[in-house]
Structures are given as C-alpha cells and as structure tokens.
Image: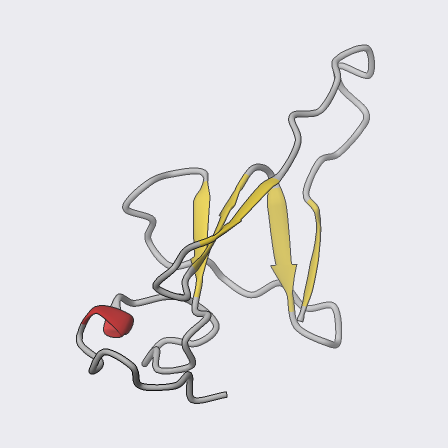
Amino acid sequence: MKVGSGGSGAAGQDEQPKPVVITIKPSGSISIEGDVVLQDRDGNPIPRPTEKHPGILKLCGCGHSKTPPFCDGTHNESKAGTPPAR
C-alpha cells in the first residue's frame, strides 16, 4: 500500500498545506488526519469507508480487522495480550 498526498497544488498555491498527522494508538489502530489518498500497489485508489470522523482515516494495526486495511474496532473485542495477526 502507498499513502500519497491528495492535494491538487493548483489552487491556492500561496497557502501552506496542512501537515498530515499519523498517530499510532496503543490499541494498534493507525489514525491518519489530513488530505491523503490511499492506493494499492498498482496505484489504484482504495475507496474509503464511511467515516465516523470526517477527515480522519483509521487503518488496522492489529491485523484482526474484518475490513482490511481499515480499522473496524475488532481490536476492542480481541483478548488482551493476543499478538497481532500479521
């Protein structure tokens, strides 16, 4: 998978783009806030699921998600101490 900038760059060239913020949560989920496009290895965009928090993309870091590569909260159901299913 590849994460690339989703900005067009043409309009508002004087404006500084907001930085993309990536946060790795203790639960294993990876939260990405900012204008990004998620692509597969061939460069095809991966459609985003309906977002509970618009502008924030949550990726699975535990390996247990039923909707990879996105986090579906399954880590909340897995037993404490269970290693990621990578």
